[in-house]
Each structure stands twice: as C-alpha cells, then as structure tokens.
Length: 184
Image (cartoon, rainbow, N blue to C red; front, side, top):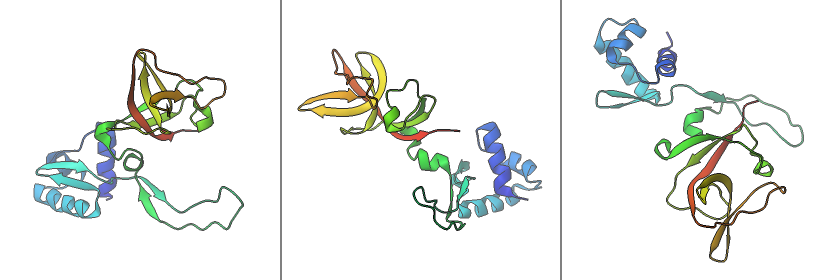
C-alpha cells in the first residue's frame, strides 16, 4: 500500500488531515499504535509533521523535477530525477501572508501576465520600486509596476496602450506579485 498516496488523497478530498481513527480505516490497521508507527516513518520522509497530536501536511506529493530543458538552441535531453517539487511549497512559501488573484485586463501583458492568469501575491512590510504590486489607488485596486519619481510613487502598466497612474487622494500598496500561474 502506498501510505503517502492514501494520505494525500484524503487530504485533497477533505481539505484536512485525517484523525488516527480515520487513518486506521484508510490503511486497514487494527491499532492506533500501528498508525503511530507509520506516521513516524512518514515524518522521517517529510510527508507530514506532528505538532503534539495534530498531523500537519508536509511534502505529500508533488510533481517530479526531472531536469532542465533548453529554451534556446536544441540540446541532448537527458531524464534525471532531480527532486520532487510541491508547487504549493514552491509558489507559496509564506502561506499566512499570501493569496491568489485571477487577472482581468491586459495592462500587464508585456510583463508576461495575461488575462485569465492567476497571480500569487504576498503582503510584506515594505515594497520596492520595480516590483509588480497590487495597490489601492483612489479606492480602486490594480496591478502594476511600482515606480518612484523623486519622493512620489506612481504605478506603471506593462502595455503601451495605457498611461502611468499617479495617486490623487489615496495610495496604498497591498501586496507584491511573487508568481504567475498559467494553465494551457
């Protein structure tokens, strides 16, 4: 039995980790001590963590990272398992301060962000010019490059069809874009 896979399936379906009693049923164990032993092995593998009696998901699954591919001139391809990559951990290392937004509009298309893409954003203590940010400007939200001219900040789109936006009444940076996700 693939214990990690069964645990991963439960977590994906229920959006929570199972109890010891549920694990007994899932893994066809007769005792909680057997579940405790198996969980110890999964902790060693990094699949889960334990916080007292709570089970916390670790690296339950993910896609295999097999190597690199040349995006320029063709080269000989060689398949080599480099690691297992969990996209949740890779894209969202700070889950408490991150969230995902769906992109509407084409003002950031030259930055590679298209309508329908998902952006992962993170709230931070400070933001730097040059970062792509989510900002509230005059009580409306937008995603643009954060720019600075002297002491004044403004927002710059990544599409020549649009003009930079200068704050009128209010301006606040809410989060910085840390990743773009596109599904084909």
